[in-house]
Figure 1: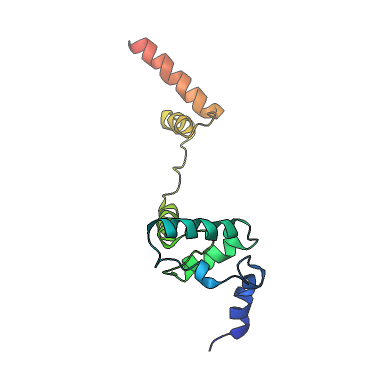
Figure 2 (figure 1 turned 180 degrees about the horizontal axis):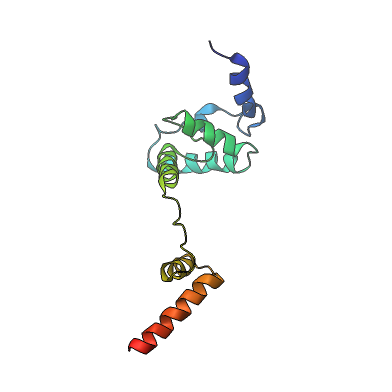
Length: 135
């Protein structure tokens, strides 16, 4: 069963949109060519930049895979790229667990641009002494 209250709740952002009283054709401009498209796109994005619900608008367009129009300040091509990048971020592997007190732990701290913990600094110092003895 469709919960109309939940659907209406998710659509409340429309009431606050900067474009709510503008002609929708100003945002669905895919039929225009070359310079006319570029100018129309710039005008639509200018409206979006002033919009208080820009994030909600973009989220709606991305979740519903809107194929046309400027939504949340992004064209269809830009939204496809946004979706791809968001998918990549979701797939990034978790950071490695640091094996503190080891050379590998020291190296992981350095790779991350962190200050090494004392246990890793100690392990690195022992490693350096070992290298001096064997050299």
